[in-house]
Length: 141
View (cartoon, rainbow, N blue to C red):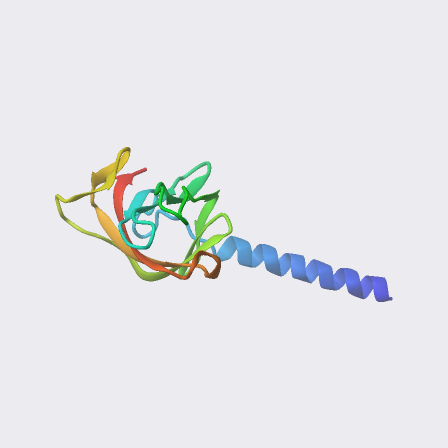
C-alpha cells in the first residue's frame, strides 16, 4: 500500500513538472525578437554582453580584463518565462520589456559592435550580484 501511494505521488510530481515546463516557457522571438547580440556599458566590469541563439549555447558575460572581472562567461540554453530570461541556470528578471527603438547610434566593441535596434532592462540573479543593466540589441539572429 505504501509503495503504491509513493509511486502515485512521484507520478503526480513528474506530471506537474512536465506541464509547467512546457507551458510556462515562451519562445524568445515573441513579441519582440530577442535572438541576437545584446550589449550593455553599465556595471563594474564595463561592457557586458548577452548572445541569445536560436540553437546551440547562448552566452552571457564580459570580455573585460579588470581585476575581479577576468573574462567571465556563462553558457547554456536560452529560454524565457513570464518575467524572466534564463541562459542555462543564470536567471535575469525583466525590469523593462524589450522595445524597438529607431536610432542610428552604434554600440559595442570588436566583433560585438553594431547599430542599436532595441533595448531592455534586466536584473541578474542573486549569484551574479543582482545588478540591473540596460541591454541594447546590436545584432539580429
